[in-house]
Amino acid sequence: MEVARMDPNQSFKILLSLYLCDNAYIGKSLHFQDGWFKNLKELTLVDLLYLNYILIDEGALPSLRKLHLVLFPRLETVPNNIQPLKKLGFLYMEHMTEHFMMSIAPHEGKEHWIFKHVALTGICTGFAKSDTGG
Image (tube, rainbow, N blue to C red):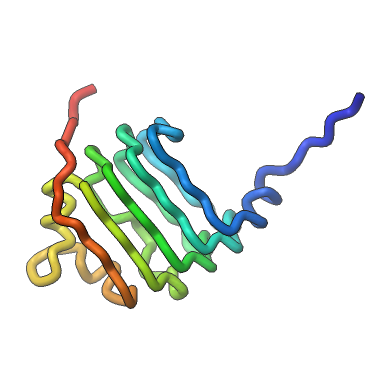
């Protein structure tokens, strides 16, 4: 019996929502490449304990409307290239490191400007315990 193989790039194009939680991804960086997830409207990432960086290529996630980031004890910076996500209307961040939360504070945070274009932003001030150990 022949098994049909699906090209992951084709699969990524038809997804409307993606939910990764409880260490479903254990890498140190998560990279959304140009051309991936063309129709993705909602992305939820929860409790990815080892994640340090989220990289978004220009041209990736062009349809994204909602982004939820919850419980990242090692994520220190806002994902790059949020500014080009023109359709992003809702951004929610909760239980991030204290360093991360200070960097996005509305008046004094150095990275707050990165997502000023987002219409609705929810920020819960609870901190995730930073674990920088190996």
